[in-house]
Length: 410
Image 1 (tube, one colour):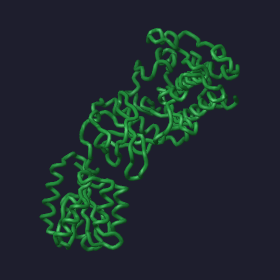
Image 2 (cartoon, rainbow, N blue to C red):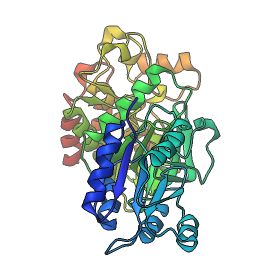
Image 3 (spheres, rainbow, N blue to C red):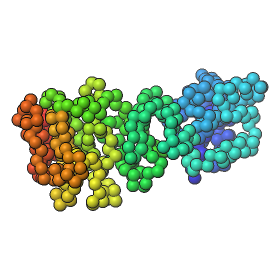
Image 4 (cartoon, rainbow, N blue to C red):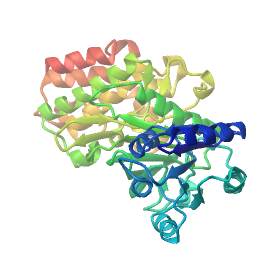
């Protein structure tokens, strides 16, 4: 069990060191602050279990500090004990009205304080005292708008899938909106590993066309805080119609550059499809949802032969026949070319609705020439698209970066 971490706030250094020494002896971690602003700065950087807060301090008194704390942490999330020589009723009432959990008189009766701490933490035996007490301790399936997960308040539901839900949420520390992906509490260990893989994969890449990961957490539920992209998924952006070829090239090039960046880091996407591509209001593309990503050095337990992960319409032949080679960066290129085809023609390259028929198409049928479906498509543009859709990996571009160069040439 991790020892609780207490923040001690007092402008009297002797009081601080005396109390900290005794608390450490009794198994508590302590962090010391000699002023209100310093205490608030520490709370922004560290996970604190409880605050012991003096009242009479320069710069900010204890009541002002308490008010600032309660703007971002509820009484249940972060208990605050006021510690003061002001023991009059008015001071105690003022402290409790502003959100204090308790009011301890000075000079501190240490054994009395220790008993209060033990009682508080006994009812919160979560095994993780290093983090603030979570406001949500229920399953992800019962989350409601307005709930908080650590310092994120849920604002609206953006979408959901097999691994969990994605919410628009407000980061109440940095005062910005984020996309918060919350993993279902019922996930098996393999799904949890895939969730962590997604976070680590994307966090390793800094690219304007790849969503930014801000934070990953596992208490009270596993979550991923990401850049919130204001815009539309690619399929909604196109409204099921072919785009002007120049626009299709522009969007596909951005996706290609994002993929090239992640491939350089040994990361595969493996589930590239319209719903994983966001187009913002300024026309910039963001590639997201690396939930099926494979890190090159990842343990093979997550990539067993025979597993088929992805969305069939955009999957390459080697997904279905290991004899055609490994699922790798050239498989992402195939999916990219399939997206390019969709943008140029308004249709995916393989359209069967029955799974067996769809796999047969992917494995053995050449898609119709985009020029036949959209006469505005130039021959050179169609050739780039079809090269990426070749059945044999050796007939595609040597890399997505090479395909991106071809797209730039258009």
